[in-house]
Image 1 (cartoon, rainbow, N blue to C red):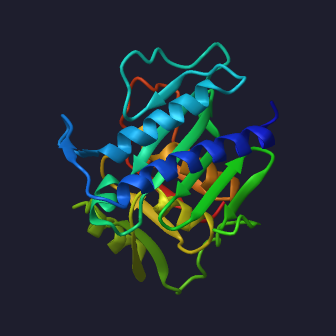
Image 2: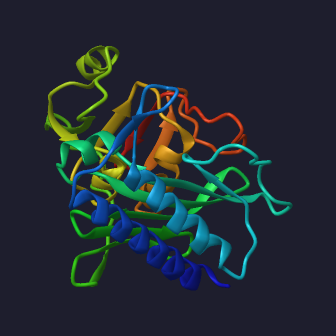
Length: 256
């Protein structure tokens, strides 16, 4: 299956998961607490089930690592590939009912995200990307437009900095002081990276904990739109050791 066809199939799976999420969003729902104290809802579980069923139905057999099921994952297959899934990224935003939550599905190949789909079901927008295809944004009508990063702001202009709504970082103030004049753009979930990809913001410093599934799909979108997702040492964020779920701190740049 070529990447363009696979991208469409993954998008449809993510849209189906989004519908499952919205069916819960429309009513009262229960909230549990996971071992790491993060919230878990019926919607997380429902989206996970839809995605795993959809991925297993594809004519390509690739292991799946999902936030909601990490046990028994033995790593990438012989081709170095695995699916990286966050069924509901931004559960806190889901609970707040502000719409800033996403479904994330990425194809990782030899430690790099080569395909990514991010669907924001409440906002009725999707971001799609794959190597050789580029990055696209699809609106509620199904119309797709290519997207690209804005490039580095001109000297003396104000940086547009994306920040987390629910995860403030004590290290951020120092980093921003070194950056210079800036305006903050608050956003939840992987939509922060997507804002960089579509040129609506310039940089997203993440100086706090995240996991692989929080970033994989949106990193594909950013990179195919011409941006960078790098560790503080300036190296691309990698996914070669999926048994280690935590990412290092990273910066998303809207320039090459």
